[in-house]
Length: 197
Image 1 (spheres, rainbow, N blue to C red):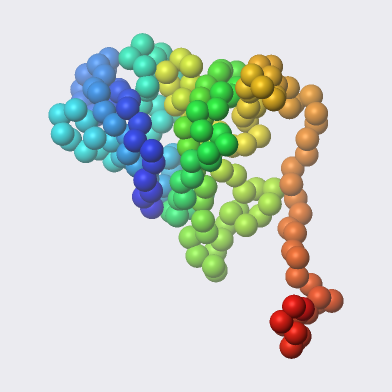
Image 2 (cartoon, rainbow, N blue to C red; image 1 turned 90 degrees about the vertical axis):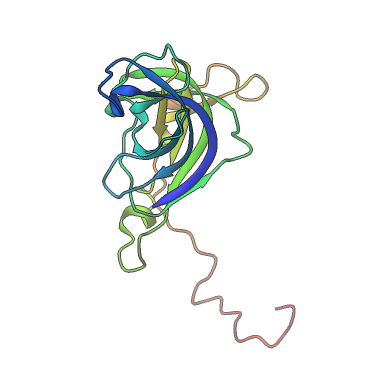
């Protein structure tokens, strides 16, 4: 249920860890916790030496002046399984983007991606269903908050290929619903005795 993330210098809103409603404590987020049906949680080491786990996106910010944001305004989905997988896509590393949040659009920078493996072969849930499977790109928003968004809620931008005003919504892209396979009953290479079959 735990996975490492690239260490992220941040602040924790003390309302999540003390009775101080407005304070911030400097920290490093260094891991995530995924519990099926719950919001993504973060492991953080506070400047005091305390280690907190399972803090939600709304508890963290990367700028001290970040406005408070509700959890449901920063993520669309809870965790799909107890088996998270974290990837930092090199092509997306620190890539600028537009985050389509429930409350509107904000600019941000890519940090890492969370994907979910099936909890078991007997019960894969939605993780193997093409039109239901989602990853969560963790985005550092320009206002200082963090968001976790699926691929269809992020538009990437750059100064050399896509440009600064991407508009994927106008393209009317559809969901991927097919499962593709290279193998079929008509292509059985396993019975060939030739090395170069």
